[in-house]
Image (tube, rainbow, N blue to C red):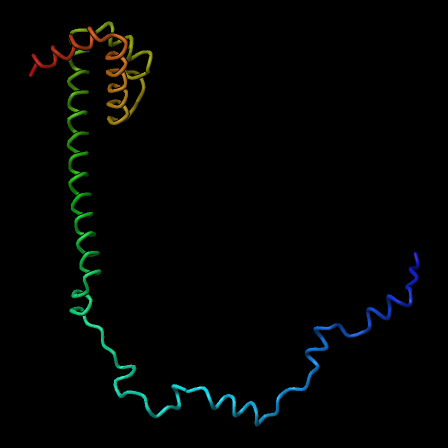
Length: 165
């Protein structure tokens, strides 16, 4: 397929555009540029630099005397202390839940064997190999189920746990 160009399109394509015409204006002479540059103060060539320039020293006492830094350090220390306390509380709660779950398991095995065996077979607890954490999690979930679905039975088991101790 051959394309035929109109003469007006060729002329429009080859004529300089307005932004190109602006670039073609004469550049200032070298002496004019030198005069312009000399008007800007230079830090490298200025002889009026203070003698202590670039000799600033930062010490730890300067950093710690800043009120913003003091507040930041204090906030970080408080946050760390709070996190340690929360970790301690959570680990104590986990230990308490684990102890109750073990006691619940023991009472269920001693007093309510048939009901507990049925649960253990359904869940695969006694027959399957599982670690202690999974077993405790399963016991806690069953405790919650009993508490919601059979509150009277749950209360009876909890009273039995209290008597054992």
